Image (cartoon, rainbow, N blue to C red; front, side):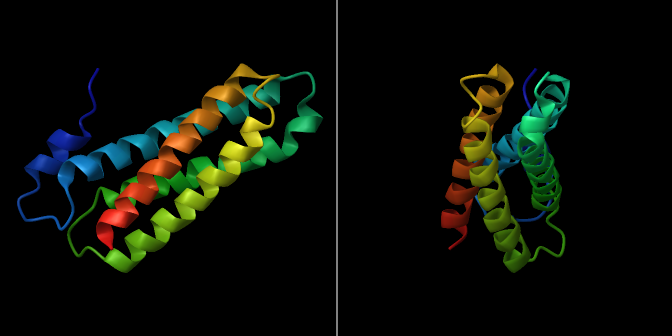
Length: 135
């Protein structure tokens, strides 16, 4: 099923100071990453060696929350504050890099960490691309 992000952005009645397709792709990457991180944290909790994955679970949950919040803020345009959006995108890129690195360290042993690390890297790249477009 295709995302509704771009169709919703296209219905916004006023101008948006960002490329709507780039913005939609970033919001989709943020939502995908939040879902992957939430699922990875849960999968880590079901592993027999859960004590060794404590940092991974924490990093996953932090990244999921930051991505979800960033997606919600970027989806709102009335009274838009570019400084807030930039700060959130920077924080999100940092969280994604951290989570991608943490999950990447477990990727050989846990497929869910491999999938999550890739989602984090994709999201970090999308955040940085949107940041560059905002400059």
